[in-house]
Length: 442
Image 1: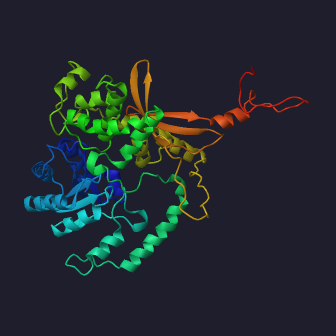
Image 2 (image 1 turned 90 degrees about the vertical axis):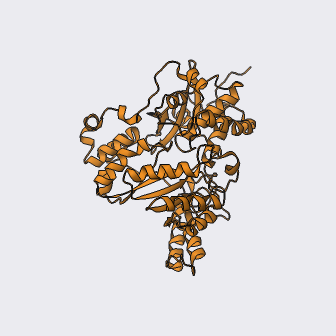
Image 3 (image 1 turned 180 degrees about the horizontal axis):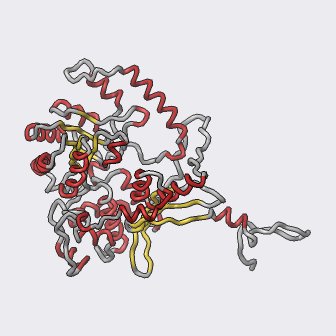
């Protein structure tokens, strides 16, 4: 936090996936010590325990910790217009702090939510320039400026100048078309199953890997049940993955909790913080037996590691910022620093901008970024967290295996076979044929 402040960050939006305010305390204190703006954040979701009264109580607890403003973080696009107005009004009535609304347009109603937020006293709303807006992003800046123009809430911003910015980034975005996702549009299902769009795509990939994509409906029905068993955590990283993966196993195994993931076990131990509601105690006993449940802030049990990290990265770190890069991204960070030191650091190669009519195709449809594997009876969740620049026909992949970072190096199979001594041989005599793949002729 201190280094981020020195490098120009003025407002720190501080949130916890469980809405456990204990997990916010140290960050808030660090921001205040740096003389910057600490914004306490409510992760919005809906459940029997997530009421306006509960959110106001959380806001008051964060205010007591010294936050300078309150943000409503609607990461899944679950807010509806009138619910937004009611929550903003309740927070403004209870607290002498600015309220900011951050809503993703996943369900297609975020613009209406923001209008109701403004009418009920919200001080700021988060928007995105039009070339990067809507869908799983935020409402367009230009749209909201136009909607509020000529009203008591007029922003005073020059719409023509903002449109110039939008057109500029429209061209910039085309350069990076290879990184586009097919899952960035409006998906109204989120208002029914409360599953964020990105979570749906990951579940689809997991089911596709198992040849069970036809069971997506069953998994979507199981997710709310698992979420209830775990005490209704908001579905935001990492709890969305924890709940979704467990629901996946419950459906495919044909028996609920026949297989319990390691992350669910850690969750039930309290390693992520206090659940918003009561967890299923029978499930907890099944998962962790007689192991002790943590009743303190989990991070208080972690030993300081910064000196150890400084020693590990050594002279590759030219500054404290480099040490922090390595601390947050052990594999990707180390490779970045090594390549910088060797002078081989290169950006990812960009594909040519398509010149034909129509929209450029997104990346490989259905390419999975999350996997669930079984090794000797143990179940692991593997996330691809990053991909390095290809060099020497090899590419580094950065993985998270049940939350632990790992790095692996792959050589594409087609390139490996083409360059191998045992690869395809060319026909050298009359009557000889070459094959496109290894095998036996029978």
